[in-house]
Amino acid sequence: MSLWFWLLVAVVLAYATKLLGYLVPAKVLANPRMSHVAGTLTIGLLASLTVVNAAASGTAVVLDARIGALVAAAIALWLKAPFLVVVLAGAAAAAGLRLLGWP
Amino acid sequence: MRLKDSPAAKIGASIAIATGLYGVSFGALSVASGLSFWQTMVLSLLLFSGGSQFAFIGVIAGGGSGVAAMSASALLGIRNGVYGMQLNALMRPTGWRRFAAAHVTIDESTATATGQSDPEEQKRGFWVAGVGIFVFWNIMTAVGAFIGDALGDPKQWGLDGAAVAAFLGLLWPRIKAFQPAAIAVVCAVVTLLAVPFVPPGVPILVAALVAGLIGWFRHNPDPGHDADGLEADIEPYRADAHQAGPARQDENPGKGELA
Image (cartoon, rainbow over all chains, first blue to last red; front, side, top):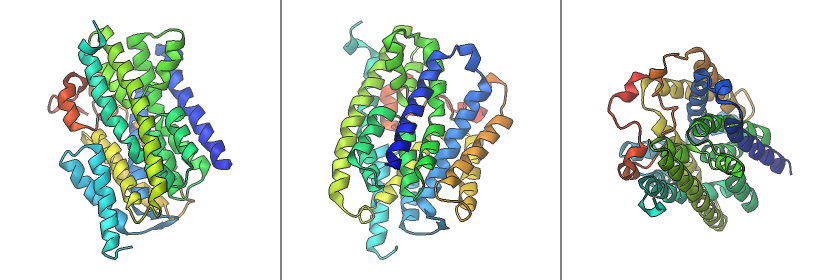
C-alpha cells in the first residue's frame, strides 16, 4: 500500500514537472544555470543508479555476476549496439557467470 | 503536407518503434524488482518517462524505500521541465494540446522536435514521436511484465544484470565530453562510498546532491558551451540516428569537446 502511495506521488510530480515547463513564462525559468543543473543531475543520477545496481547489495558493496553484466554492457555500447542488445548482453553475462558458479 | 510525406514524422515514427521496443525490458525488470503488473503499467501509462521509471524500480530492486524511489524518479524528471520550456517556445501549444504535449514531453520527442528547423515539421515530429512512443512503450511494457512474471527467479535469467546494462545504456549517450564523464565518475565513487553508511536508496540521492552542486557551482555562463550531454539529444539508437539525420544535433565532430 505504501509503495502504491509513493508511486502515485512520483506520477504526480513527473507530470507536474513536465507541465511546469509549459505553464511558467519562459523568462522566469529560462535560466541557463537551471538547465545546466538539470543536465548534471541527470548524469549523476544515472551513474549512481548504474553503480548501485551493479555492486550494492543492501548496505554492502559486493562483486558478483552483475559486474560481468556491467562489463558486457560497456563492450556492447562501445560497439554501438542498440539499447535492446545492450540489455540482452547484460542479462546473458550475468546469467552465464552464474551458470559457471559465480554468485 | 500529408503526414506520410513529412521527414520529421518519419524520424518520429522510427524513433517511436525503436524506443517502444525497449519497453519490454522495463516491464520485465519492473515485475522482477517486486512491483505488481498494475504498478508497472501505471508507471508506463501515467509517469511515462523512461529514465524516471527505471530509477523508481532500480531503487526498489536494491531494497530502497518508496520515498527514496520517488525522490530519485522526481529528480531525474527535472530535465523534462526544461524540455517543456524549450518545446513551449517552439510550438506554443494551447488549450488541451498543452496538457497532452506535457505528458509526452520526454527525451526522444524533444530531440525529434528540436532537430527540425521548420515550425510545422517540429510539431509533426514531436507529436508522432511522443504519441508513437507512448503507444508502443505501453504495449511492450505489458508484454515485458507478462514475460517477467512467467520467468520465475529473475536472477537465474540475469535480469539484475539487464538492469545494470539498462542504466549504463541510458547514461552512455550523455557522456560526450570530459565534464559529464568526470561528473559520472565522481557520482559513481560517492555512491560506492555512501552504500555502507546509509539505508539502501539513499546513496543515489547523495550522488544527486553532489551532481546538483557541481552543476550549480561549475556553471559556465557562456551559452556556446553547453554541448555537454545535457541538451535534448538523447537518441541511443545509432542505426536509427543515420536514418534520423536531422534529428541529431551532435553529428559535427568535436562539438562535444567544447564543453
